[in-house]
Length: 156
Ligand code: ZN
Image (tube, rainbow, N blue to C red; front, side, top):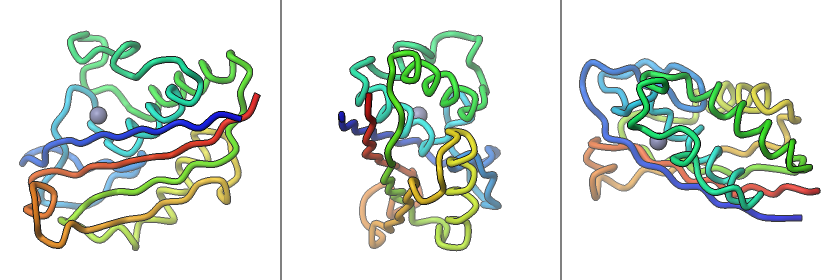
């Protein structure tokens, strides 16, 4: 068994969609990034790569590569999943935290869990999503960013 950890943060800006865990969420601001800026799927991707000792998503999908402009992070996570499967691993479980002030995560939590379990082909019980506000402190608390962290366990 191996453990992995992933963390990501993106800036909130106008005229962008807010996509978390592959789910589009109604919001006045969205996340800025080269891809669709899905901070949660990026954290999960990094957690999986970290667990398998395969580096990080920046190595596989550089934000300087026009090929990945506005790319669907669910597809990138699918590619990452194939890499860890090719290395002989299966996912045991994921535990994720979304750090977000601007919207309530609770009403969309189940949909996000379902979507991640579908993308990774794992049981919904293997995906846990938690949410934290930042008590109106720091950049996240001031609605300037959303961050996500993920711990993942994989087994050979
Ligand atoms: Zn990212």
